[in-house]
Amino acid sequence: MSFEVEVKYREVDHDGLRRLLGEVGAVEVGAMDQEDVYLSHPSRDFAQTNEALRLRRIGGENRITYKGPKLPGPTKTREEIEIPFLEGEGAFRQLSRLFENLGFAPVAAVRKHRTAFRLTVEPHEIEIALDRVEGLGDFAEIEAIAPDAGALPSTQEAVMAAAGLFGLDRIEPRSYLQMILEARARGFVGSPEST
Image (cartoon, rainbow, N blue to C red; front, side, top):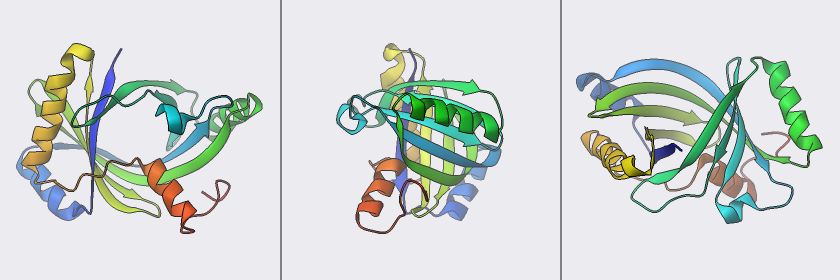
């Protein structure tokens, strides 16, 4: 069982952070547009269980992701299971329809432009993502994968060390989904059909 360990930061100067990443030898691994469609479960409330199920599209590539409940600690840490499926918009729409036919409903879509960098903080491979999220603004995420529960403390330390290296200190504890749902409740973001 592997775990996603991440911290999100708000009000990030992407240009300044990009310069710092270059200075420490981080390698840019690509820029991409992502669309995440989050689904609700027909018989349990993911907001209450702290879980998430999403369909992700990165260009023509598609993935389905389950995120388990958050674990305690200084980072957002949870089990993550991500599985690629057939490429293309048609496959994405078919799987969306399959889930809807089973009673899952789309909650919201999160669209972002992400530029990802990789940096090794021994012995961990860290990903630093510069995200521009539609309707929300600019953020940075620092993430690493812990291969098992025993590796969680050192992985969390590596993620926090990377954040300190770049002077990031304005932690955003909410997910993009939660921020979009809160903005929608205040009338700033459209309905699920328009998002």
